[in-house]
View 1 (tube, helix red, strand yellow):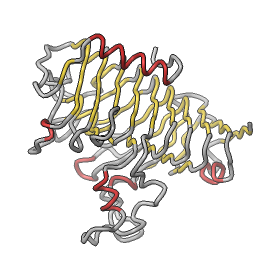
View 2 (spheres, one colour):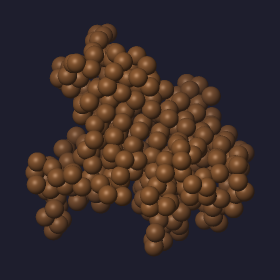
View 3 (cartoon, rainbow, N blue to C red):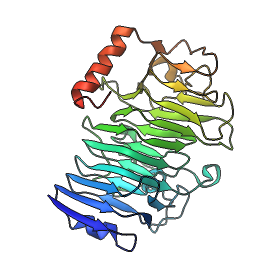
View 4 (tube, one colour):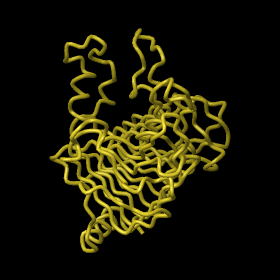
Length: 322
């Protein structure tokens, strides 16, 4: 296996473009102010120090793009992964924008591939920190230029990033994810094990951690197992664990710890929609600093159901769920 050693003075994009997996890239401490896309399969990126090895950029949704349109959410990423079985470890990925109420969404990490793993990684932004593909069907149509809306065109988002089909499985283990609104969103089968979700102050008042959009055809969605939901300045009772970005979005929260910024109702239906009728939201054994009064349209798992999910995680990731 090839191993490459890079410093902040190096062009990481050029280096990874030249790689064919399996290969490992080791990043020394420092600030890598670079927008990076990993397209090769079986690439591992390892930082020297989780907090001192930082990949950062500052694109945002309302920023004018070279094509004359705004960036939109999905072109704002700092790091994008389209190669299969990519792993990042022991580093920070950041979108440094801090005013989403003015500048719009600002993605730190966009994962558009199967078999992705992040371990001991910090993901930092505000709104829409982490995107887990595939896209909802209607957005693929929109961004392929197949509607009457001339704002978008074929190639608005590159083809390899515009994932539509496929059951993409992704694992996030012992990560810290920072954000304000919908800061984990998408349609992947994604497992968050032993992660911390840090909600930052939100100028518009209300925050949301997850925004799942899984289709009804998908039996598995987001699983949050033994995670901690912490306030990084978010006000008491001001943050919901999740709201459905599209109908049928699915998430399960098992053996998690909640600080008092989490609203006792736990979940929100998404503005004036009726997605509470179709959302598949579940919880089990939540330990909260404040009283819980979960919405009636979410369901509490039985111990048997929770254990089935935990056992599935253990089998799929060879014990990584523990």
